[in-house]
Image (tube, rainbow, N blue to C red):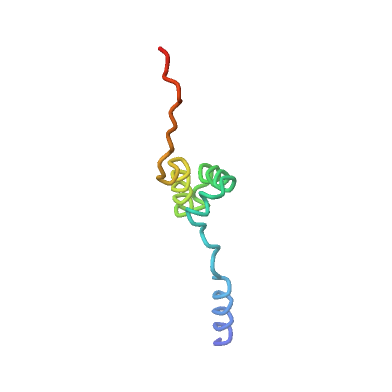
Amino acid sequence: MKKIMLLMLAIMLTACGQSDPTPTVEALASNPERLKELRQQCKTDRARLGDELCNRVAEATNRRFFNNGKPTPYTPSKEAPKF
């Protein structure tokens, strides 16, 4: 009986390996193709991907949209507008 319990414990521990690490927001923001793919998957099957990954995808999308908080250079035209 003890041998069976030890064998079952060993099997359960090997089955509970580490999961894949969730990509960081910076990594997602720097890879637009992967970000687009994950955004589509989060729209269709959020339950399978999980809230953590989908929240990171949303944050990466915001950072790309808002340009990481960097000011956008404004370059006005050299000619005055004609009304």
